[in-house]
Amino acid sequence: GYCLLFYQWLGGRLAVSIFLAHKPLTMKKLSILALAAALIGCAQKEAMKSNSKEAFSRMLDNHYEEYLKLNPFEATQINDDRYNHLLPIDISNGYPDEIRTFYKRYLDSLQNFARAQLTPQEQISYDIFKYQMQVSLEGLDQPANLLPINQFWGLPITMAQLVLYGLARAA
Figure 1: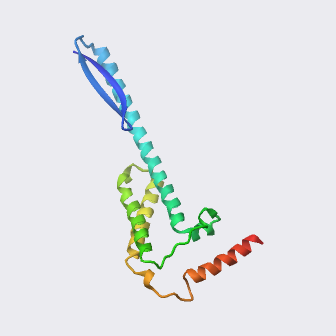
Figure 2: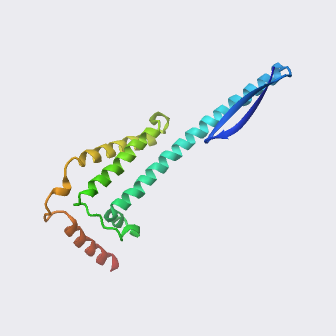
Figure 3: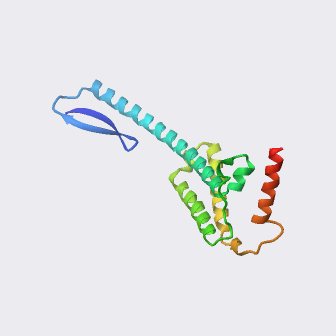
C-alpha cells in the first residue's frame, strides 16, 4: 500500500500520522519518507532538549524572583527596590509554613528535568539548587520563629541596619 505521513504539533510535540492508501509504494518513495521521518524525529528531539534547557533556566529565574519577594531585605541589599514595601514577619507561625511550601514546590519541580540531558554547567546548577532546597527544608525543622529576640539578629536590628543603609545610600 501507499503511505502518507502527516505532521502536526500536538501539545508542543510533533506528531506523525501514517495513513495507508491504495497506490503502490516504490522503494524510492519509501526511502524518502523514511529519511523525512528520521530528520523530523531528530529535529523534534533537539527541540525538546532546547525546550527542557529553557524551562530549567526559566524555573531558576522564577525561583530567584519569588525568593526576593519572600526575602525583601535581601532584594534591598542588592539594590532591587521592587519589594521595599514588603515586611516579612518571620516570627509569625505562618511564615515557616509559607517558606516550606516555597522550597518544597521548587524541590519537587526538579523532577520535571532529566539531569543527564542538561549541559555540564546546568548539571552543576541542578545539583547546587537541589542541595540548597533540601538544606533549606531541613533548616525549617528547627522552630527559629520561637527563638527569643536577641541583640545579634532579628527584625529590630535589621530595621536599624536598613535605616543606616538608606542614609548611606542617599549621601
